[in-house]
Length: 121
Image (cartoon, rainbow, N blue to C red; front, side, top):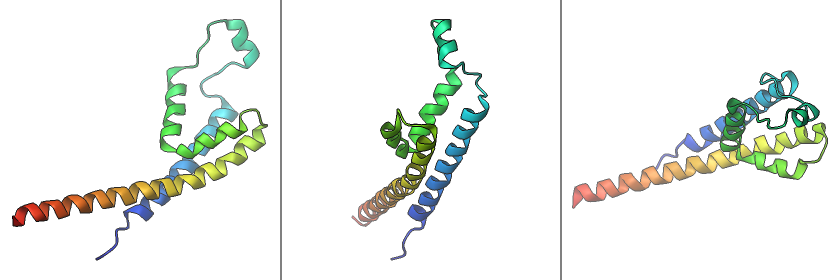
């Protein structure tokens, strides 16, 4: 029985997505394309909320790179420690996507076996 290449390919895609999101977040942090105010400016503004696209980006990042939940451990840490936490988050993304691939392959095999069984009965 040939093995599927899907899990390995998804693992590579997961790491690539994690790296791409890391670059996007670095760009957002460095160049501030959303024109986010500093904490002091936001406090003087009163009822300030970030643009919807910013929140969509953050939510997408957590959905596509679940390893980012490791950032809970670096909430009050310096910027360099936070950036260092991206490495395990990105590397954790590979095994997570690999497992998703394995589940998809198993589900597909299960459905094909069930359809074969139904066609013979």
